[in-house]
Length: 480
Image (cartoon, rainbow, N blue to C red; front, side):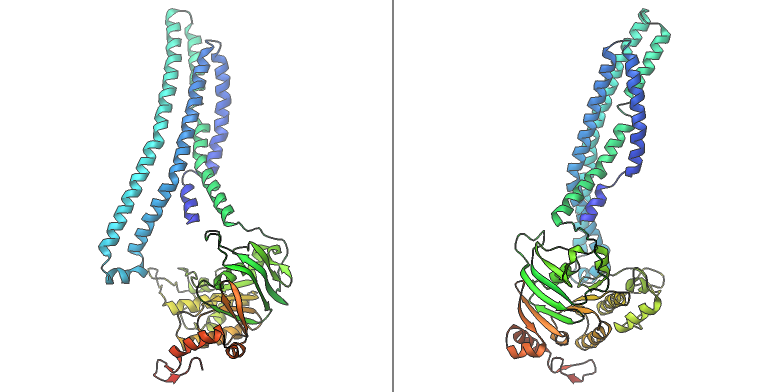
């Protein structure tokens, strides 16, 4: 949303074009001021009248730019609503439910209403924005009529010879050109991108723009990752912290599973470790070094992740696995480790509508996302974050894939977030989160023997999955 708002604010001529106009406008202004000085020899008030018209024009155009910027928010909101209604009507993921629930007419009506509203706002914005321009024209024309009438009257009466009248008329025109020269228009054009940049800056400040450090994180972590008394609340989530004085140590090269109810802070931990956000207090330390001291890009090159809402590129399979490039051997090995070795050729575009393109199921896409993370490990990542990485796979497929993941990341620090205990139990240690704090920590056997929250959640899930049947009808215990 923020980026879309910024793009809408940046519509219009590029800032580089405005700078060219500003340079040309400054030359025009210097010439106009010189002409005004010459015109003053005719009548002292003539350049003052034209200059007054220019100042009034400048103020009116400035008011037009200010009004346009104030109106931008409403237009942007209407633009977003209109775009969403359009995407809802044409994007494939929504088609099934729109047809099933008979919502085609509702979607069309919604789109028409929002597009009509957008056009109304755009028309109103244009009408009100151009009103000051009309007043500017009237002022400049009136000032010029007054000066030229005086010159014509003087020439007819004989008090000014024809040659001098022509020279003064040219000076008057040159002075008037300041009002509608390149400088005014360039400043008006530049107002839109400048205002957009200021909005972006304000939004980034409120979101907490991240500062990069200078230290490098090559080959780290070597000993441990530690969350030390971390307190964090999302910028848009009010003052209630998701994590409060959170403390957890993760030995380097180990695997840790994090479980807990929705909203306990599991995904937040992953985002903080990726430095997508910084905590309000406390620190995340890698081998005793606050990660805020690391170069941001360098640290992120050491971390790879699969989030629940992973991106699906409408690009070839190769680029989905290695967007920044990697040897084909690495790509194929990552796909094999993710159980997607025979999914498609590397040059196959993963989207319909392209020549030779194909679409994937949810489970297949999840394997591609896992392959992306495993390929990053082959390229040097040392920390692997998996947030519900196999949620769209069947239980048996999930267990098989996680075995492969652990094998492929055996030299990495692996953090798994999952609700499926058939996967969780395979981790070296398990952390139970509740209300942003660690309430239990240990191995599967230790937590089962403890008989606390983990045991309760495990038993509840076991009642649903124990003695399940696979696709061939063979019984197996997924939690036994």
